Length: 366
Image 1 (cartoon, one colour):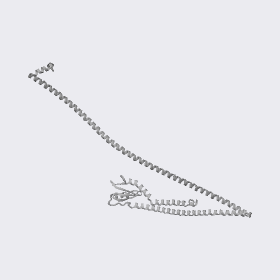
Image 2: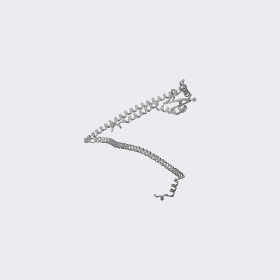
Image 3: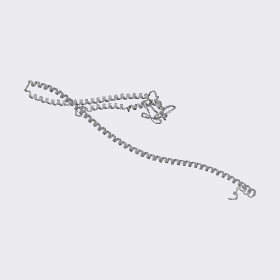
């Protein structure tokens, strides 16, 4: 560059630098420029730092989002693995259920086939039994018809015999016919003897059954008479016991038991003792047996309360509620009632025995 190209400002600067005043001014100006540049440089750096901080915060947020997504992805993978394991278990369970269903279906089919075969067998037996019944009824009807025909034939032959006898008186040359008639008569007599024998057998059987019936009726009458006497005697004893209860104390308490004393006072002073048909039996202090029930007794404010299962009842409520139940149980266990039922069963069995041993039901009479 030539000297002609130097600008006037630079020329003046160069000229000013030569003097001390110019040097100070230059130095001051240069210092001001340096401070200004330093200020603007620091401001730009701070802005850049703030921008970088903002970028760093944004990156941290992105990292947090990525970490959250990574955690969600991990959880989703765990859920997926669990779902896959559950799917495998469900598939195995479905396979086992299908196998069991097939086995059950096979068993049911086999059982159904068995039932069908059994039903067919029973139906065949039923048809066979019906056929045998029809044959027996047919045979019985034919025998009845045969008996009727034989009876009519016997009457007819008797008439013919009478006619032949009359004819013998008139005709002596009918020996052959008479011989034939005699043979017929002989056969009829054999049949008649067989019928008379059957009739005698039936008569003997009827006499035997009448004797058994008479003996059974006599035994039943004797048992009923004894039962009536026993009932009268029991009723007399009951009345006697009631009379004794009205004369003496019904219940004697334990001396040192306040509850037992209170219960005895209630029972002995009860206005209608005939209603106290079930008595209290002391087992221990406060524990009693009432018929078949075990109850607990206590005295609250001079009142007797009784507990069976849940809460307490007053003694009047307890007697009204449980006395009929216990009387019903005692009646079912009454030996006289059982004896009466036994007599009725014996009558039924006797009648059944007579029917089963009848010659009409006997196989030999078919």
